[in-house]
Image (cartoon, rainbow, N blue to C red; front, side, top):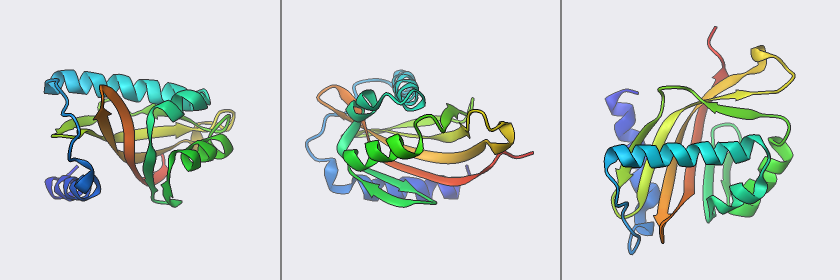
Length: 161
């Protein structure tokens, strides 16, 4: 990701976090530990996603989740997210993190930002139907619990040949 693009994403994230920062706990982990924590959270989140474990997914997102998707637009709230997963993902799509693509940065007074590329597979439809997209996730740390608060999923397309 170019420095200009990264700067634009970080400015957007600052705007998105905006007034939500006040009064929230700051992660008490170092950068390496933070990356390990977010890596574990990502794995747990997408194990639930890939196996249609809606209870775990629901426990891992904030009630006011905002999900920005380049093809479907903005979805707000946990119930909308869970219903979308139930209708559009369960049994139809699985996700893998592209190895080496993830970056994690602390967000003082809020939690962390995670960026990377993920690959989506459609079981039974062959790899020619797989695709990739970039993502940005804002993880909120509140009362010792990490939850996804904001997601931007963009640049969806077919796998490069």
